[in-house]
Length: 273
Image (cartoon, rainbow, N blue to C red; front, side, top):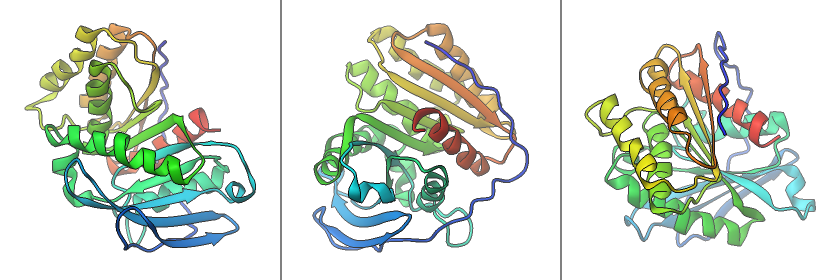
């Protein structure tokens, strides 16, 4: 099933942040700091990966309704949760603010490690990083929170956007998907020598021919990677007509980093209303 969204957003996206930030520290996956308020709660903890040995700081936001509710919620795993978006605002904080604005009933999991983006997001290191999120972090979140294992989303920008596509290719080729939604924004072509090699990498899905019961949202910037990376990737994947895959795309008239917030907001509206 394939859909195409063509949307151009002019100007910058203004995000009014409600700073309810949890601190960092601790180890072994135990919660180390919690900040609660009328707009939700943020908890932070650290988790050492058995896959690559790195200790990640993880921030978890749950909406205000979580404390009195009983329903399981989708969980959105945001790579580069610690990435600065200007001033003291991080990717996690921008995403949290958007979720609060929309009243999104979902759990946001921000993963640190921006300094490892050229290791964790690109092959060959991406395989271990995907395994860490799917096999270590997500189960830990699902043990501690009412997170639905059948509704996991993976979000990334630039090299992180490439990671999202790589996760779908690696897991889809192996025949098992760990996420229901793959949210790739202004993807790079990763460690491949060019776009053509990136497209050849994606063809592994066509060769494997496995069902892909998931949604892939390919968003991009019209002045950055959108026309040169995202559009050719979308066209190729649409022509392959992967069984079970819902494929969508959008382009935003913003900078490379500026495309991230509107893409995430569109994902909230479409997939987590």
